Image (cartoon, rainbow, N blue to C red):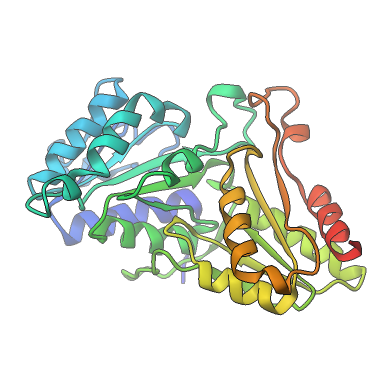
Length: 325
């Protein structure tokens, strides 16, 4: 298998999807000849022409409104929002149109072929307008799916599944890993299931849960904890909506402890929803309070990014607090 980075895997998935189905279109700000600000769509316009890979005006609400229209007419648009921070002008189109199209019509029409790609999260010193993690805003909206890959193999399989899924999908790509995460990726067309978490390391003392770039950070924390005799089970949630309650609950029933990490701020972060659900499901099996290791309840800083982001040392402290409770 060839070795790819996260960007190459995403580009490969888009290439395969466009070659297999002429209804798949890619568009967004600078995605055409320029290949996007991160080059995720490089060479796609060259291969498939301006009719299927093209630039849009700098208006996010228009990008998603246009994508909704295309999807409603049977196309499979893959719309890129240049940074996830820029998705908020399109919030109304996503939560009031994309998510509700099928429901409001009684299934007479829908936009299930829609995929929205967006680079998200910190790690590139982008400051407050290029570093946010907005997944929790959209998780409150029935009718959407939200997916976050952690490495190139996951990115390709999950993106192909998202493009072909019968529901509109928000696909958040951890930009810090675009070139930093590499690995073997099959050249062939393959899909990974949406809505299913993956247990990437089994353990018995504490369950560690994360998604996107935080999975790598959590794995590092697990290695440090295990040097002190603490056995950690590590789970990549992969899909925020729907999220895999059963896999997480089964793990917590075994370990009795749960530590959740995400980059978004603590208050209103998706870890809160997970903690509430697991407390309901596993209350009598919990050995200690559920721990959350997250970003801070402040705007995302520029010079203090490392202090803001949850790192492996913060997660280790939460693991110890859970064990010692």
